[in-house]
Length: 261
Image 1: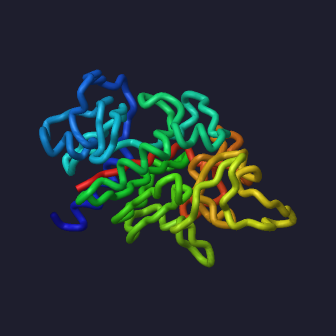
Image 2 (image 1 turned 135 degrees about the vertical axis):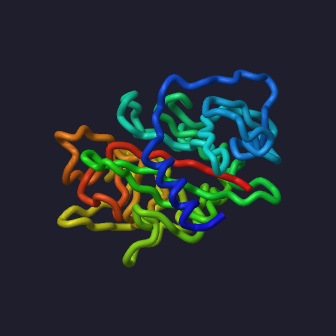
């Protein structure tokens, strides 16, 4: 499959993700390792909520699958303000996950670890973004994506970037690739004393509305920041933020998807 065709499909995905009444398949037995595997078994599968059990996992859990022509994508984060979900959470909550898989949610770091560390399967990360007043939206695709185990503080690893939103994980002197996860009650951000403008602080999470993220002396990406409406979304230190796309604005939405093969 040509690169231009593939990027075109991904752009379509980033722009045309519409969350209507989700179909739910409440089976006791998992239908696959993940959404990609479900699509591999039946490429006529439709988008909705499925039960999955990643290779190596001891239990199954539910996820939202976005089924496209190029495969099944497992949604691990959705932040759009529609449910009013608060992302100011503790380490235990980010570990377990919160929200509703049919609406705004964070799937959970343990589940992300299981999804992205399946034997003989490679994981990709697709970040789909939109800003207020942007009719096209944007996306960032990473050729590989892994979340480490809790013993390694859910360390982030991302591969080669492509897309239209820019590589906010790695820009300028900032590199969040390889960062450990931090929350308001568990600080792993390498920020002994950080400074933005005239403000000094020691915790990126607490500085950015107590959100959890892979901070590295804060960095240029935080999709779990505080969502803000269009009339009040410019110039905030904490926001739904992707520094290479509409850098001064809190974004309209973010979605994070994992595909495996």
